[in-house]
Image 1: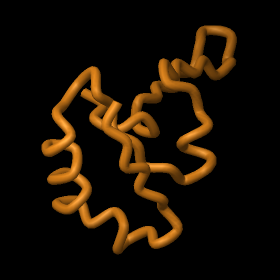
Image 2: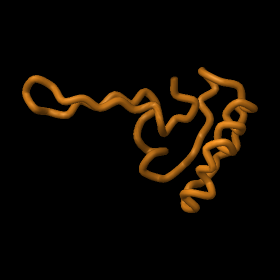
Image 3: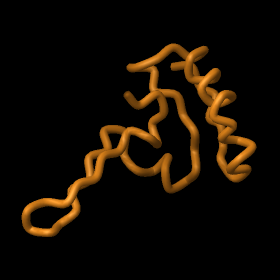
Image 4: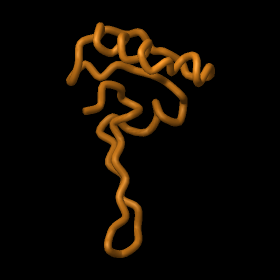
Length: 70
């Protein structure tokens, strides 16, 4: 379950020792430190509660909360 776009990433090592990356929302949010809601999975309220519970903005002050309700 990936309530945030930046956490919707899977990486695995293939049989040929190559890295395979699956990122349905891309990697931009991860590299730009953007914390964005995944509306396909959870409600906006659940997303905000998770941000508060995990204390991400306090732990990583460079994160940018993108508050868009599409």
